[in-house]
Image (cartoon, helix red, strand yellow):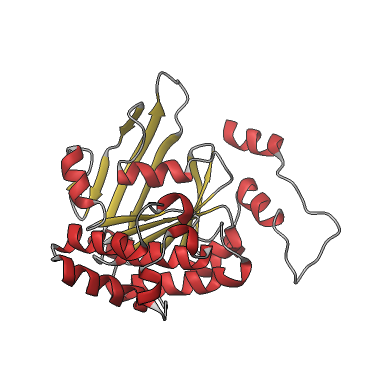
Length: 281
């Protein structure tokens, strides 16, 4: 733990998020450190995992109230920064990859212009240099006909190619922290593994820390070194292997997923009564 803290890219202590006048926090007392590693955050919809990711990026709605004892990126307190200062960090020092490129890419701009814009904004390149950088980065994410793709609009490319474009844009400036929120959920099963392998390659190459947010605990376990399991806004368990799962919620998530090695006639569902009893203790 000490080694991870010494090399921490992100340090979070007792993160709390509330919306409006709600007395129930969306995220409550979440704590973790992230080094140059792959950290997964898993949980069902409404568990607080995506809210945690957006809180780190300071991209929640104005009604959100964020508080923490510690909330540092490379030793610099994020909660003390102005929106202008956060804008300078986003894309350059920290990046967020969304789950569906159809809603993340600008529909009226070509792919080349959007990737080049990231190069101009975060790397300070001129127009011609930015286009060259965009072309090189698209080739790096295994888009072979980069010149043709650069001339296309987002609706003219597939979901898998769109996600590669998003990865190219977000990792072009080699950010210290990458948050990937359900990056493969909108993709066909056949291309999910390829996208994850590509993301892992680039994160390792840039020596960055990665937070992978997903509801698929088996996929996260196969990809990440550590897993934070969130339920009702709290981290209920931290794992390095699914075999170590002890909390009823974690076991319920695992049992609710199909396993081709152990087929069953009917998948289990979460035992809410057991979870409520656990939370009351």
